[in-house]
Image (cartoon, rainbow, N blue to C red):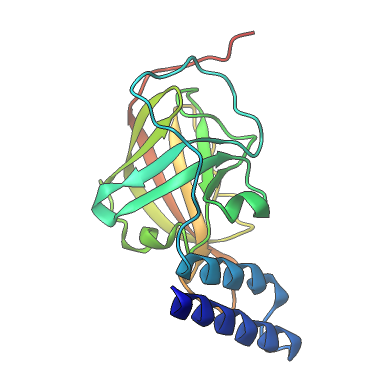
Length: 199
């Protein structure tokens, strides 16, 4: 464990020197910190999975309300409501103005490419992604995979049916260089109950 800790500290120190010297944009410091934290082990998340699903209520911003997984690529990530940098240090974050699983709208979820969404590099069409929430299990099939500019309006496609959009920075694991592109995975819902927030 000590070796992992020292490796992480050295990695962060090297990246910090690169930023100070101007060889690396400061925006990549967070990715470096995430990578160093990742090498020391996953955080201990406080999320209990039960067999009894609860009634649907919109979660508070910053709270964990589920998990996202894909067995084929060994993806299993805690899912939070909101997408602040603080949230993305802990797992995947859902854009709070997008739909919730079961609401029949597009759902937009992002995470960092160097940690939680690194397995997306291996994703293929027709694979199934599951979102287990506090109120039900939802499954989505991958229909398309694209690399787009972060500012591309086509990245977040609003559809009349429920769909899942996962995104992360691209190329995967890049520390130096252009980080303006996004790796985007588009999925169609294949199962899961419909929900509506109680008034």
